[in-house]
Length: 408
Image (cartoon, rainbow, N blue to C red):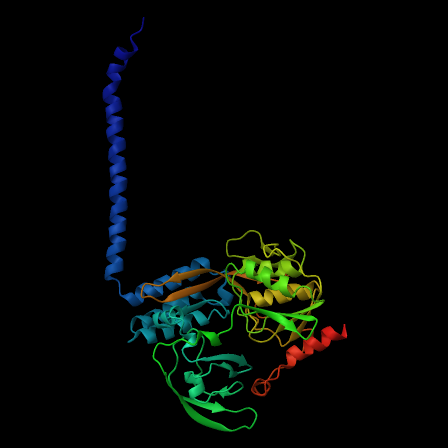
């Protein structure tokens, strides 16, 4: 009988040599990886911060930007042109002015870079420190609301006033100091000073909620969506349950900057059949278009007559929703042409110095396959709203919607 154990003895040295070679190869791989990590860490430590930030921006855009041709821009050449300027920038503010100018050459509405101060301003929620909310009408920055006993009220700001210089912008640090004001009703111009009354105090009540609803007259529901935030579906269901008994409804998307596509799809599912296409998006490496369709997440349907209000501050997801409702003839669109800013953003990257890079990664198209970026939505009924209307407490767009619905 064969003794297999004894027969294997001559082969043990061979097996040991194989094990030694395998272990040595494994240790060499680990050592090589450690060298690479140490090299990268050394480079990060020794490389100037301006170079690190520029490399982050350049690399992320080159890899994730939705348009392979960069809208005809020579991206590598552009980065090479700006590199010495960014490296020699004397301040962080100047560095970001240059980075913002570089990124702006791509010519889209969503790809942007923000300085550490701008990021901190958003995170600190400074929008309520002035006690005023502003809207953009044409090229004018117009006061929309003013909180009582706030810095804006003390400075004499009133709804409808036009800010000629230094308008406070939601999400940025308040520009305490002189402002040039113009009253659109009288035409009178003057200067005022915006200064904090209680440092650090926030006037959040003046900032509209994401969702607001009620009844206009006796038989028209009113639903205002200031944005499309995360987890709005349940509240949206409550709102429509409350006003859905009315035979007509106004959906107000004015001033809506967009938000999460899931919230857009849930809103669409209230007015459109579940599964109805809202928009499609194609990324840089996508072989097929991604479908964004109406969902039943809000748990309620509304089949009454619908009017949708839009204006030049309706952006992104608000435009995609209005476009779908218009394409399916589900509601009449009233107001002014939208902002034409409709791209998908899946990259928000924190930069090495605390700044932020946002990159457009999806080319969004309507239900007919037509690009929404640069085109937006043209209302079925065009009605303008002026600063003088705001100053006098008038809303001709809302009035036009009510007239249309009552006529039906």
